[in-house]
Amino acid sequence: MAGHESFEPADRKRQVADPSAQPLAAEETRQPCDPAFRHGVVVGFDGSTSSERALAYAIGMARRSGSGLIIVHVANRLPTTVWAGCEPPVFVDVPDHRTEVLGLELACAEYLGDVPWVLVERGGDICHELEEVGTEYEADAIVVGSSQGVVGRLFGSVAGRLARRARRPVVVIP
Image (cartoon, rainbow, N blue to C red; front, side, top):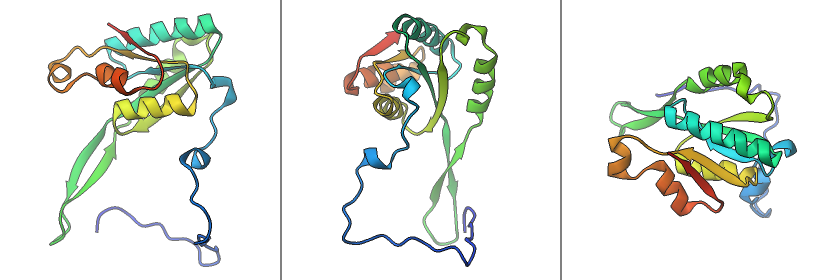
C-alpha cells in the first residue's frame, strides 16, 4: 500500500452530499484571492536567469500600474513509480521544496520593497497553472522569461505555448 492514511475521530460527523443539489461551478469552489492583488501582474518565477529578467520587468509593470505582483512558482513534481505487488504501478508526485527557498530569497530582496507581492506555489503543467492563477486574480498580464535550452526548442517553449492558449496578454522577456 502506497502513501499514508489519515483517520478521523469517531465523533466527527461526515457531511454527505445531497444528490438533488446542483454541482458547484469551479469558480465557486475556489478560495477567493486577496482583493489587493486583483488585476495585478502574474509572473512565472523559478530562479533562472530568464525568470529573474521577467520578474524585473513585471516589477516595473506593477509599479507603473499601481497594482500588485503575483509571483508564481510551479513546483517540479517528480513522477515516482510505486510497485504494489500485482497491481499496476502507481505514479506518485514528489514535491520539490524550491518554493520555500525562493520565498526566502524574495522576502530578503530589496527590489520588491515598494511593490505589494505574493508568492503562489502550484504543481502541474506550467502553462496551465500560470493561466489558472491569471484567471483567479483577473490579472492584466502574464510575464514569463523565454526558454534558453534545447528542450524548449524541441518540445515547444513555455512562453510559446502560453502565448497561444492564454486569454490575457502574455509578455515574453528574452
